[in-house]
Image (cartoon, rainbow, N blue to C red; front, top):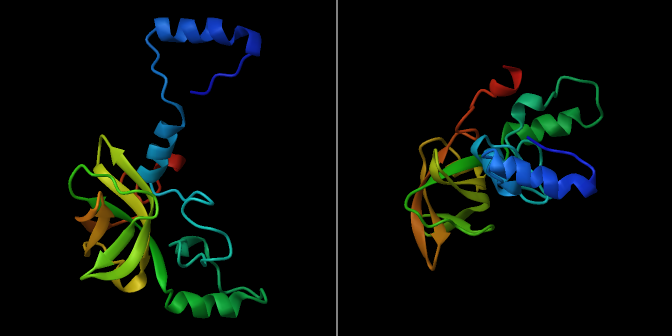
Length: 168
């Protein structure tokens, strides 16, 4: 819940919520929920103009059968996008840093954009990956704490892959 009040009432409302058993969590909980369901955030998971909607795995939102002047170019790009946006399930407790390298057999194949420790899913991270390794079940490595951790490429939304919850 988000609570809105007059600033002069903030201390009274805060004390009452805590006394009633409320647990403050701030933006960290919101960011974790966003990562668990694979929601993209600007300037964290991508910078506008650097990637196409195909690279961000937004296929279901892209319409190329229109008379839009860019439809043909968009369809051509979508036939073989160079990047894909996926979730990584990372083994172990070490959480990678934002921007951590993703490798496959020693070659750079991507970057972690939103790392997280989920009480439901363990260590996870959203990542922009080269298309050739962005297949569900693919094994990769993620840079963590001076070494690497094994990781598995997964569907973008681990908790709601079909995006049914917003429509529930």
